[in-house]
Length: 325
Image (cartoon, rainbow, N blue to C red; front, side):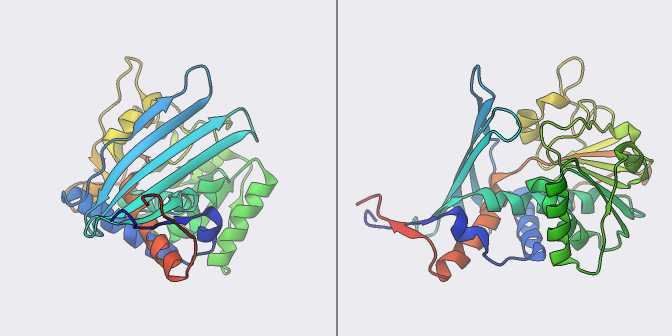
């Protein structure tokens, strides 16, 4: 209909919409399974590096078959050094039953929720059965939600280690964690090399300026290294005994730095949707040193974004625009 309004939901509109880690993980798990079953669609993203400038843009299209929602996502990032990053990302949702638009949304909070959910599911799939110690490297946006989500899938973790280089970031990670688990503690470490050797699970979620470069073959037997942002060595995929990814196609687009000396990527052994659908393994043996690559899939943005949008609209948030009058 030409007079159909479009609800626009800003970053502020979405900032305090209540949603728990358990709810986000369930939504992300469910959409991964529908993707494996062929009910959802997630073509590889289109990446456009801008010549002569440290910036990149992405375009993503997806379909969530369980919710019957189509989405278009765009992302633009420019970095000029520490503290000079510009990053804008939006998603537009459409109801494929009615054909009507649902919302145009800022995607920052969506990404900050679906990424730790995907990381948690990668860990659930690939951590060794006896895993008890987890190390988080990085205290930025992705790091702040990592431990609350991780404990949803591995509640038996009894030692949580944190390595960061910025006091404000460390404080933010501790504050968010305390909101979810006031009875638990995080051990802040300064020896990242020693912490890697102690950890059963290592989450590399640093920013691009990090000096940390964790190798998969430096882990203890049975260790798991998850690439969430920065902080892994370029050899991490090649050096692993077993490798998984949220998507091999996305890895080919955004993980070129993990290519071997001949410029080719080692094939992954399994993709997360197939593992969650019961058609793949997270590891072969308890002793495998596993590398896991977390690349965001737009279907997970749809799942989380739809939940936030429906709640925001029910609360009367946002503005209605009539673009098609």
